[in-house]
Length: 433
View 1: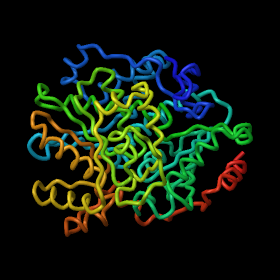
View 2: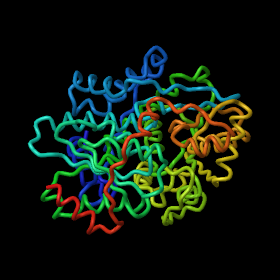
View 3: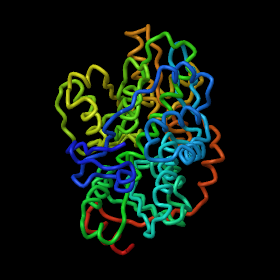
View 4: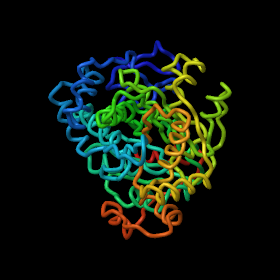
């Protein structure tokens, strides 16, 4: 299958080229020329299958033309080796828990899949691949875990100083080996800008082979569609309309869900749930898109003022605000509202939310109050322990930190400070050649 640039549909490349380059040469994001529709039999039979088997069937229609079936199956089964359980919180509201992977965040799925796909496409490559990734928290740890120790690949993680949680930072600054953490004096938007500028800088690209592990890379994005199908598999009553609320920052997660819907997944409504960085909810209401500097919140993964993947949503709907607003509703919440939701859900239902899941819960709960004939699913994207200070303050007590996280606490942080200026980042990269 070929992939086009969101800035020029005539600019087309193969899957391998899209994965290796990450960003199109015109700064556009890659999108599949055709979004295949799954056969009806897939949905009839999915209740008998496990998550990794469902993921393989979806991968086969997405990537089967480019990767041999045997290799694709091995790649998928190796990457998808944990569950994403659907847990009833109360009434018709369910949490899709995406934090059961090695770094306890939803990005484990896309990052692990991309690492293996990149390894497949570069198995005979004679140059080191430099993976650039901007993170506001969980992307860094998931990518670091997915690529740690992979021969021929060096990962450079850019993160905003003082704007990720203590445990998130520890997960990607303590690994060493082929993982380097760059502590940027700026915001996530600055980190993302530095990565994008590096991709189009001719001097850098003459010296280094670059790709990205953010959701701008199609190999990170498309595998995120897998768990939407897995959520539907676990619903006991498939006769009801399904609404899915997605905590949204860079909008890769929501984009993957919409792609799953275009592949045949019967979702009636999507909700884009954000914190006060509400550029997209504002667009959904007004039809006007005004990116702006991001604001810092307790739901840091959503502190994005110019979400990259919004270009893909526009492409999916041919830039039609009317069509986008029909499929996607937007809700935004303040820090105080997020804290209140964490507190009330724990007290009423003994279910522990992280700040991102809390925004998605509030949105789907509000929607179901007006639409009781729907089943609501919200995505719980990270384990609450990653935000233990905030969550413990909300519920009024401490809870046990999972072993997967606790092991990082005493490890030594190693990071390289850089400014938000591109020339300094460029100098760093040129020294890697």
